[in-house]
Length: 188
Picture 1 (cartoon, rainbow, N blue to C red):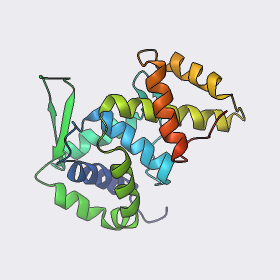
Picture 2 (cartoon, rainbow, N blue to C red):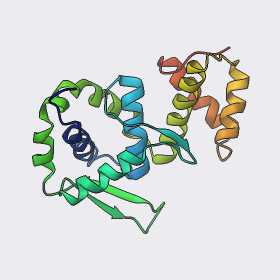
Picture 3 (cartoon, helix red, strand yellow):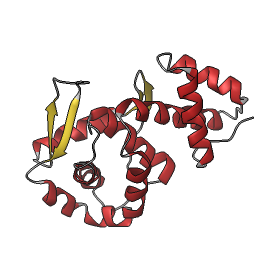
Picture 4 (cartoon, one colour):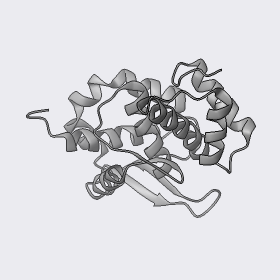
């Protein structure tokens, strides 16, 4: 996009998610950030400019992780290591959160409805549930691009190989939910 600094849009995206998710009961950490941004791009067509690859915990973007570090350095978010419970990280708005969101105001306003939807649909899920759902979407999109359309059982078997720590029931439930909402191809 000529004349538009995508960096501020990306930084504003991270600051906005921290702001909107600060009062959710679940921990908003690095894994949740990765999955929510992936879903925002894939399901709601928000052009964030991140490239995702499939890693152990689902879709992952190194650029997004680097941008999180920059937004933290700018004061837009605070990232704290959590030693209790499930561990991991907790991301919350920093002292300059408003300033960074203001720099990306046009981008954030243009995609406000998509932010509302992704947070309504996925914002209350924990990192583990987000990991599974984002992986299902990733696998579905990858198969579509490759021109493959496996049966439902073949797709579930593939997902079980990708996510061996999840039971078949959990995979079937998450897949069914995503199919029902039209986020992934319905398979028979």
